[in-house]
Image 1 (cartoon, helix red, strand yellow):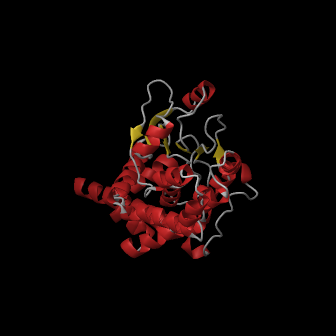
Image 2 (cartoon, one colour):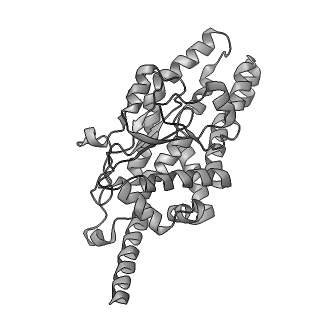
Image 3 (cartoon, one colour):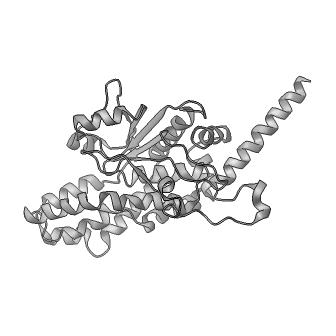
Length: 318
């Protein structure tokens, strides 16, 4: 009798794990495969209020969002209030901190490297919260930006960033997300924290962020959404939404650099300020070359076993 119960439990776990892995790989659930592939839902279509990226308006940060609201392949939704993505939180006002306190966060993960924290300062967080540092390399991007802008030399700036060099640099940054062992460890640990942080009946919210909330944070969110069964098209749209939320702030920065004489052509920075699908594709190409598939990246690259992937979906979807 006990053996039969254990067998049924193992079978249910195996079925659940297979379903989650199928969703993560971007396939429709096996149970509905006979109906043909469903068209992926557009995140800004008829159900726009639920599917559009949900911004948390703050004065000291411009790219803070609730990751919830998106539909999965099987028609479920990613729950609101469980995971938040953000840019740096070091310049939050007192009112911002009070608003962040209302999110019910139990953990904040900071992907910034030491140089970024030293320059911008530590996170301003509600009492009782201390950010967990999990630096993800920016491939020297921050140092390069400080060097090229600080030089005030238009010739050097053109040599470093012009002619497609800035775009090529960003593609290398994204490849490093996949190739760097420490990066993979920190991404994997963050997804495991999310998996352990909640059930259908309880919420323990987590926020992760970098400096601009678009590259390291954008890649983490793309991976998370696909891992719980959100269609790739929708995950890409969430990734690209950083361009909308950051546009005014980034344009103001470029104008300031021009007015102060630090850059004659601040538009050289645009490829570094934006997210682009070819940056994402550079990382995904590396994923396929190294791990054979997105599912292989989750399990072999990030070290997420089937049970963890099941917990991740249960924590976020329903």
